[in-house]
Image (cartoon, rainbow over all chains, first blue to last red):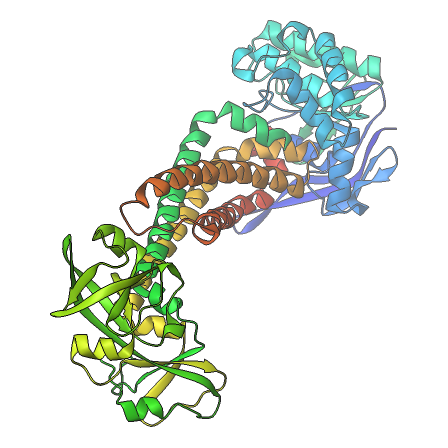
Length: 230
Length: 350
């Protein structure tokens, strides 16, 4: 098991009251499994990603990644674990404007403390894998939306993660490009044996997932069998 | 410095603008430092050149400081320092502003009458005796005076016996002579001050003893002149810190979404802080170096026509100060990086 959330509770202050973002959530994602997470806005999807990735600490519960409990780590240890074992793919890719495609990936290696010389070769391999080897020197503004998202995916894989957390990667793409990105994520998940959790609003991509989970009001609404999540 | 270097290349226009501002501020601070030192030398270099430990001046009125312009010590008072406690040697000094007439016309000078032991090094000729003077090199060049020439001071005919190294008193070139000749030329019996060597020297009645460097403030206008110039230098450095701080505040705010992404990727706050400070350091050092080089060139040109001193204190120190205050401004601005929340990289929080 790569990712396991046990009885996670997380709240936010909301004016005079407290908003329960995650309420006693149990969740698992195994190595080689591509899981989609759907639900209305405010249902807790992004909070679950933040907690699973060690960006936010839950009020209670355990977050296990390959058996390591994130809630027992210091902030510095969580940073290091994120750099080495967790890859994030963000909405609209969130690439740095000053870096070309290959440097976006080399930055991830630099953050993870990997040697930059070796990182260059791996970055080019990954760009080749996502079909962008010819555009390795281009900056984000010289790439299309789909290309930027594919650079973001390659960047998330630089640290050789065990867990890939994907936050609405198709929100700025048309259906054809969005489907291509989701298929790429699924294929990479299976090839590399990653545990991938993808938040999406778009139900048409659920057929591509191994398993789909719905959230509502901070709870996992259901965890049906593969490709029956709608 | 992975991100820093690439940001500098990518946003080179913005950073060139900041570097240009830093260069201009450095140029102004270095020029002002050279001018401050130059004006200071023009004001007090004759006092600075005195080989004494302390200077005795007439005790000032209450609420005022000692002054060469108003000090007058009788021969008896001056003689009171001979053999006094802590005094190794005492040299009466007469200082007066007058005019010297020579072959090229007349010029205002400070006439200093004292023992030969207090004269600055004689570059040409010999130490002047009775009825003779030694003029500074710049005065000799300006008035076309040479050893052996006759000059007139207040109607008294004197001969130039020597040319000394350049000194000034209250922005006037100095003419040195012995105390007897000084009294003949000025008609003043009292001396202005007493130059003293020794330690723990107690003042005699009616006098105040100050160190040689403290005596600079007794030269008319020196303290206020230096004070206002130093205030301007301080303000320029303060403004520079604010400019650098403002730039990096805006720059950090603009890139906060990017920083949140890099934090989410696993970078620590320290990683981002080091990167940002290195970026600021590169811009500061390059800007200050360019400004300093320009100031050195302009200063060398200006030195021939205005009081300007270019040395380590007026060149390297202001450049170092500019980099230091800029670094403080940048550090205060980029510390907000530590508050960047990586959660904001996720969609729901954006």
